Image 1 (cartoon, helix red, strand yellow):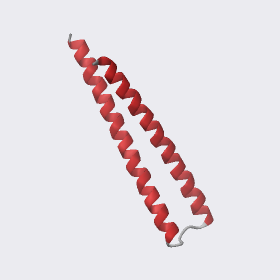
Image 2 (spheres, rainbow, N blue to C red):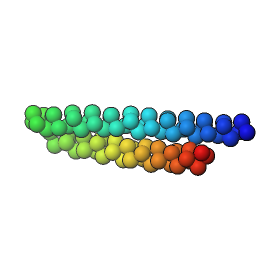
Image 3 (cartoon, rainbow, N blue to C red):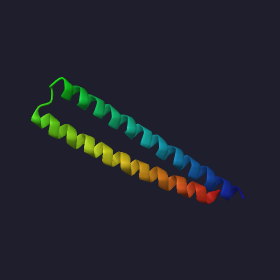
Length: 82
């Protein structure tokens, strides 16, 4: 019986960690987007910086999507145990 309880608590802990990871990357992505928009509005963006910032923003969005998938998978696994 305690084995099932241990599995449930481990699944919930995994879900919580994946949710924290998602929120961390969401904040990082929003921060980069705000900096990019601000620099673009004030004309500080050179061609190289624009390409580099686009690459960084694309990578953070990709990672954000992956973190969301991990969270959804952890949530499904936790739901199966209950």
